[in-house]
Image (cartoon, rainbow, N blue to C red; front, side, top):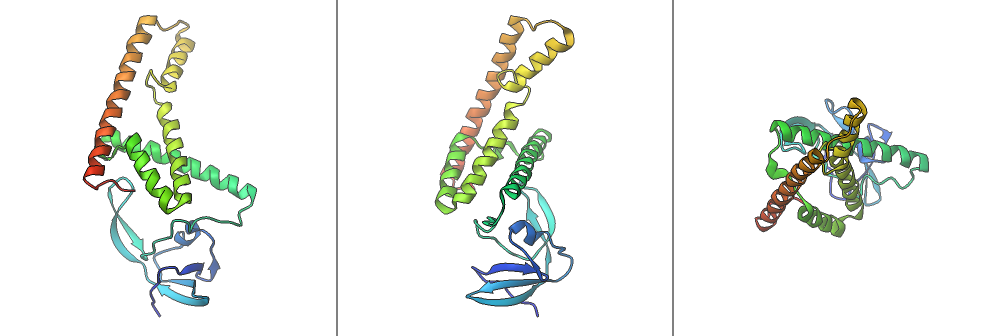
Length: 219
């Protein structure tokens, strides 16, 4: 019979298949009724949940239609204490690729206008969110730090003269055309690069302060 999950229920199996991470829980086919085996107050229970089609916001603020069962995981639920060193390396690699892909997709959507520039956040916003996550879940805090590192790594590779990506472009130019970029061109392009970066810095600073004072900053 269909049932209801309760707070602090620990999911130990789905459709009689043992699960240890949130990724394993959500990867089951949601077109059919799912059987969740949970541990509740020391008692093992079997609860059936029928996924429902719902319109939800994705991480970019876009509407998406998804089949959901209405489960919200604890902040530390995805931590697998029994992972071996090799498993940890594999999962770390997958998480890094996912984080970098997420940053690239965000930049693409920002350029084509699918994501509003008001969603951009800077150092104040990162500090605010980091503090909130640190107080609630150290694991979530570490995940955020990893995401910020991936973000900075991708941004640093953009072909903006003031960044490493700009220096790579200069080096590629010299390799292809067999001549150095003139000092005047380097100075002008670097000035433009710094202007872009400082404009972005002040814009995100304004965004962060506005969101904090209007209580619209999402931790």
